[in-house]
Structures are given as structure tokens and as C-alpha cells.
Length: 152
Image (cartoon, rainbow, N blue to C red; front, side, top):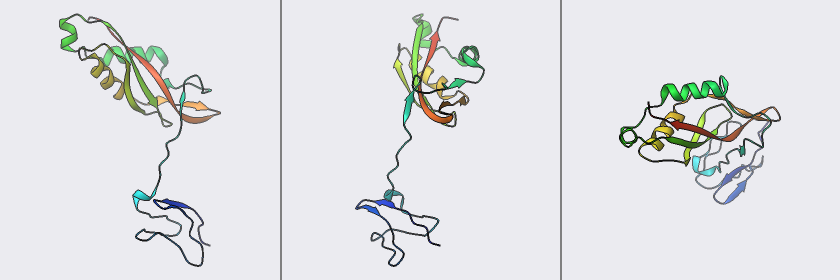
């Protein structure tokens, strides 16, 4: 039995037929395993949902209290912010992936003096979260994480 599937090339979609095994010139084709040149595929990421669109929101293991404790324990106050006694809250936007990992970390509202970079470092170093779910299936969810800077 031969596998029947379609693959994408720069010239369009190609579906090999059983008699001729049509394939674009210069490409690799192997039945069942599907070995192709990497530039032949068009990768489409899974959609990203907001936290209001999902049935179960992503959650830091231990809840919001554990998240606040993690931030307090791992936050390193930047020297430039200490010199000018800068305090405030930074909102970090990130995507919680289907596996609970954090990706696409960026500042949605920052305050400078090295605090933005520290907030990004802190969020990127977080352990896995419980992923968000839509109809009991894990999905990618965009979240906003507050990071508060107060003088020690």
C-alpha cells in the first residue's frame, strides 16, 4: 500500500500519483516517510487565543500566589533603577504554548532603567505553566504578566 499525500513546493501543491511518482525537479521524495527539502514546506503555526477566548486559562503552577512568590524570589533589581529609586509595574506579554512553555516574550508597558530587560529575563526563566484549554484541548494563549518593582 502506498501513502497518498500532498506536499507544497514553490510551484504549488503536488500530489504524487501511483503510476508516475511526479515530483518537482530537484526535490527529494520518499513514500511513507516523507523526506523533502526543508524549503518545500509552508509552516503554519497554531492560532493564538486571548485568555478570554479559552475555557481554561493558563495558570502558573501553584496559582497567582506562587507566581508572586516566584517573581519576588527571582527578581534582580537593576542598579540604574536603584540609583534613581525607580518603582512601578511592568506588564510583560507572552504566549503560553500547548506544552506550557513560554514564548514570544515582549514588554507591553515598560518603565526603562533596565527594568524592562530584567522583566523579560525573569519571564523567560519561568518554569512551565499549566496550558490553557479550549474544549479540553491545549491551545496557545496570550497572557499579560505583571512584574512589580519596589525598593528593597
